[in-house]
Image (tube, rainbow, N blue to C red):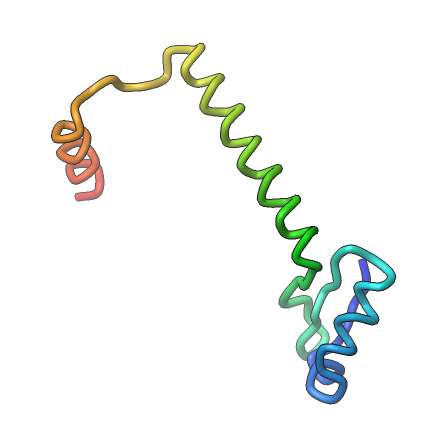
Length: 86
């Protein structure tokens, strides 16, 4: 993964990000020598979000097949959520 420093961002701005992303789909931004942030092209972000949502959907479907769900009214659901948060 490409890397760029916070100082590069300060001095070169978006051009530093564009240069880093020309090599790889993501780039790590380091601050004082430590990895702090990741920047990526918006298309890469959308792809990762879609993968995340697909994984959540697969997990939900597996829960339904395994019977790991509760069937209740909206009122009962809110009561249960409030009770578990307390």
